[in-house]
Length: 318
Length: 299
Image (cartoon, rainbow over all chains, first blue to last red; front, side, top):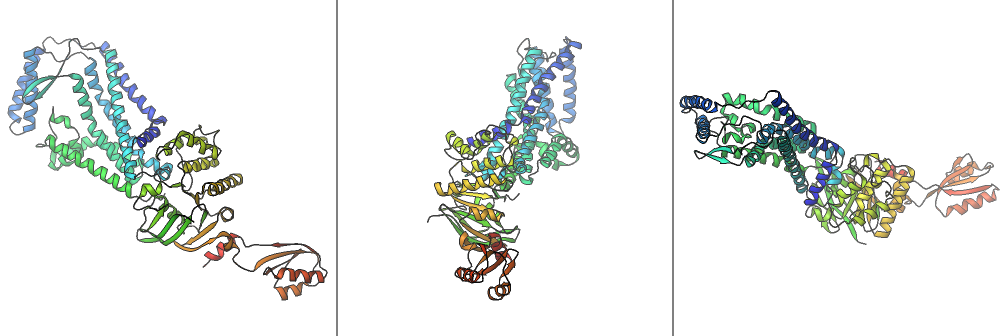
């Protein structure tokens, strides 16, 4: 198995396209840092001395909204409970919301680039099986004393490794760029999390890693889908096309449906953003964290069963 | 003689249509076995079933005592193959390509790779990217790939496709050597009949998914007792009629040809000398494999 993964990595990283992908991620993350720095120098942010007063006003509004919406919508109520608790905690502990960019706020900003990581992962996923067919190398690959399941599994694991590598590259370059451009915050700022009705301080570093991983779920599901389409139809353009379209439009379309139909909660994209269960409101009322996890597992299994089922049965005739 | 490959009533249907209708034959140790048939006869399908690219619908294929249906890895591990054109990863070097395949078999050392590369005569270019290779070099790399794990059975689907005459001759030499010196069995499918004639010990002919004939190549070509002889002579001096009537000969520009048994040759010769006709030479015009092949598959 190890040897198979080494083989896949060799095929992946010895192609110039892959190296270009790595370079683009690094350049984008660093470039974004440079742009933010430029922006900050041009329009320096001012420290808000009245932050306590502002928070008080916000608190008052939040309480009113909670009172009016909270009864009908359980999820809304939770969201505002959390907001209020954190704001109160800030006032009583004299912790101003961060006004200046620092390394951690920047790393949080570059989380948006995960969709680029998603695009690249999907492109690679879509090519993994179908290119073996279009190159004709599948014939020499499948006449080895190795089961087809193992060959496909090694390809999928390599895909996960590649995706994880892009993510850690994004995180590391962002952290380095943030450190160079904005530096560490003056006093260490913990992340304020709201669990079991209490506000607790958490390490911002671990929190960010968690946020990165949570934000990658959607892209990994779509990459798995692209991998499945590429295996079943042996067509990488089809796999890239469908998956990229869904990556860019899936969220939006699902949100439109979620407004009027409750079955929208069974759509993959209603469940990919698990962070709503930590701070936010789920798309459809009544959705829970475990519901979403089960939905994700079900989709994942369907994709994999299709991919592995078709790949191990297929007659290679081309 | 040990049997290396054995097909047992192998059938294959694709979408309900029978493509292979029950093939059975054996390939012995150290022989070069030719696989002949017109296009669409099922040659490639059969080869793909032997190497595990296609599933068998019915029957079984046994390689060195291991059933491909029950022990896939055990059976396929004994096979080295080139299926149609050897497609390689073009963005890798020849050596990196071989490494890919070496990692998929157990216990192939670097020395073995180098040895195989030398055997196929690719040592100079092995560290170049494959996209710079000519078709002949890719064929050699394909052969190297199939020999890495010392297979008991080598399967070559159209091995001389796109090779120049020198390349074909070289491949032929390699195959003969591997079969003779290492006891490797080789299955060759080709539509180049003259090539098959030079390479193979036995040939199987299939048509419409059925086995028509398996024979030793010499028996196959020289099956008839009567052969065709060409007499090169001077002026026949009015004896043409006698030749036509008595021997059913065909009169040529510089002689004639007859279909006769071997014993008749001196009889004709004696008569010709008696008639004082000049004789410059006698040759046999054997039926080629091609003629035989067309004869067998005609109906």
